[in-house]
Length: 354
Image: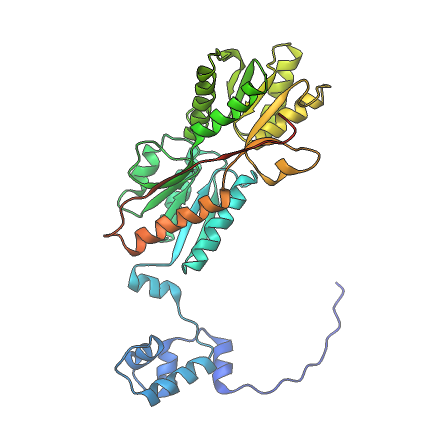
């Protein structure tokens, strides 16, 4: 094996303190021995507490710095029963909606002095349960979760009396826990309203998993808009499958080949909308002349020049940030905080696909 050339490097000889620091993890016992004081005196000096003279404190801090002392956060967490870590569980890291949500959560957590563990479940309830157990064992202080389904009884049973939880993006209707979500019913309504007022009829709906609260709410908004305009919903154009782009791609192609296709489609999210557009275009359809499409989320791809997707915008970053706000306040002031539930209104962004 080829060996890299060596370079002779001359270094200043380190002090005894620096040598010790490079060989081991320095503890307060090491500092106490070097300073010839008690463990308690070192602890008081390092934590800024009274009970040690200023001269001794100054000497202890200087020794700790020279020994490159690093506090043991795990041990500190065991004493305080707090690890300053939070868990964030999301269903699909490949969907660009969730990285923006995660960034909002992470940056707000860091501002509040917490670190964040991120877990991806791939829309599997069993994975949600598994990651909750792992995060409990890691002694996180609290959980933020975007569940893949509104059926969260097993999930809530798992965390009951173990740690506080805040839902984000998707939440069960009757939960006693805090949450930050979009008004998904309103989002489905304004998407469908736009298509109706633009003259499209009939209109289809392709959503995610049946039983997922947010997609059920978006479908309800779709139905409400039809009712408001005195129109019938074509149930043969309503599909609840999953959130994968390839699913929407193949579904729209099946509809086109069977000649059973609406004039416009409301998609449960932008990923599905992109699959619909790609599948239709590959069979010679023009968007929006032959098929209009409205998405949901407003991911970065939606605004690209070659896509220009009309969509319902959700404030992903703010949702992540606000969910951490609720959780941190719950952790730091459990007696004073009423469980907070936030519902944000989405916004229709009109581009070229509808």
